[in-house]
Length: 202
Image (cartoon, rainbow, N blue to C red; front, side, top):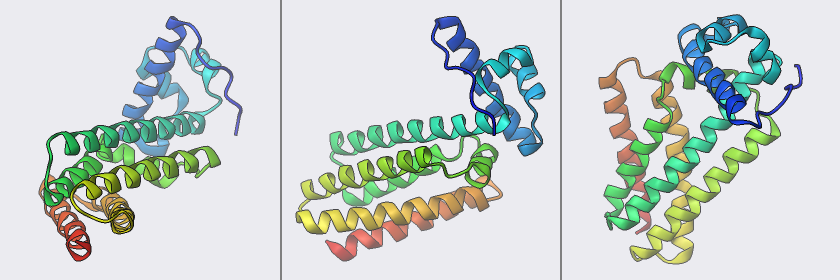
């Protein structure tokens, strides 16, 4: 795989860089791995030469999109946790919000998430980002559970089990649901499962 040429430093370069990534999201979602750098450049409204200033091939573009996806997910979960605390939600309500946030994060668009999940190499950088996000989520939800009367040990264990279960189940739900109704029904099943974990530890 080629080495990325350069990082954008000026505002104009950043605009081109972002346009390429936004176009790539649309093209990958519609065409999968059949997408080409020529097609992505055309969708972005730039020359393929401009694209190659920043990315060596489509795999580098996909890897950068994966990194951005994780960063966006981390921010979304942080906002979700803050909302849970601010609104003083019950554990049942908090679990629903957490699950729905996870579904939303991984459904924009569904076809693109499928490509990320299946095709992107698990690089050290990506693995560290995902692990960091999960640690942040576990600790944040653990602090919330303590505020609802859980002991520190029970809160941490329950949070870890809940986050792990939600993470694995939501990925399957998003990838395997063939309609909005199926997605809704399967999301409800994940909510029930996560709630049962909290109830068993409370």
